[in-house]
Image 1 (spheres, one colour):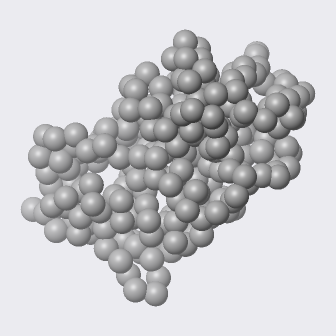
Image 2 (cartoon, rainbow, N blue to C red):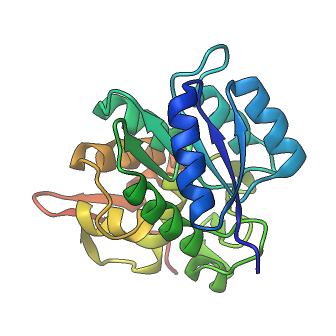
Length: 237
C-alpha cells in the first residue's frame, strides 16, 4: 500500500531537497513548491495528505497560505507542519493560532521531522477518512453551543464559529471532561501529541483566542490559578 502524499513548500532548494530525499526514503510520495502561490494551486489540485510549509516565502508567506487553506472546506483538515528559521515564540504562536498542527525550527533533524509527520498522520483525519477520537463522539451540546466533531464545526445559537485547529481540539478536549482541571502540558499533549515542544504561553494564547470567539460562552473555559484550565457548563438544566 502506497504511503501518503506530502507537499513540501520551501524557497530554499537545499532544504527542499533534504526534506524530499528523507521523506521518499521512508516511502512517502512528495510534491514540491517554491512559492505560496504554487503551493495553493497544488493543494487545490492534489489535496495532499500533509504539508511541510516554510513560513518565510516570497510573495504569499506561510502564514497567509495557512489561512487560505483553513478557510477552504476542501482543504481545511489537511495537516500542516510549519518550518520557521527563527524558532521564535511569536512565530510559533501565530502559526498555531492560524491552524498549523506542528512546527520545526531550522536547522532541524530530518529524523525528528519524519517522527512528527508520522505522529500527525496517525492522529489527524486526512482524505483517507481515518477516524480520530473526537470523530467517534459525534456531537457535544453545551447550552446553545453544538460541537460537530466529524466536520470540525462549532455553532453557538445557530451561528458558526470559525476556530483554528488548535482552538477546536482544545474545546473538544476540555468539554469532554467537564469540570476536570488540566495543566497546560496535559492540554498540549492531548491536542498535539506527547512531548510537543511548545511554551506554556502558547497555550494561554490559544485559550485567549478561543474565549474571544466563544462570546457569551467564553466563561465556560475557566482558569484555575496555579494549575491550568477546566471546562464548566453553567447552562445545565
